Image 1 (cartoon, rainbow, N blue to C red):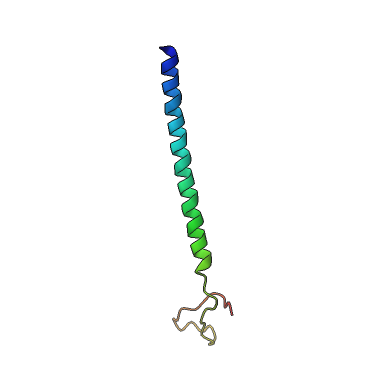
Image 2 (cartoon, one colour; image 1 turned 180 degrees about the horizontal axis):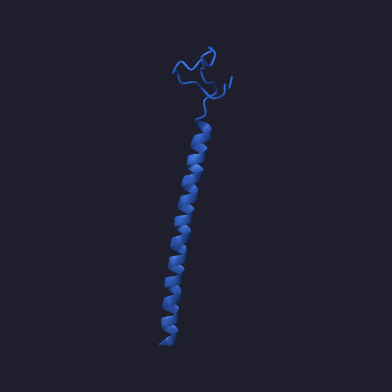
Length: 66
């Protein structure tokens, strides 16, 4: 019986390891998807007011990309 019990614990251990690996794969895949979406959604140009930075309360882009 000792051999069967050891085999059962080994099978449980393998299931836990497979579950953890599947979870990690899911997390990595989700992060890759988020990074891909972030890089693909970058705008080519940002409209910026050509006025001086007089502090008139308007929001401005930090850096022009055009």
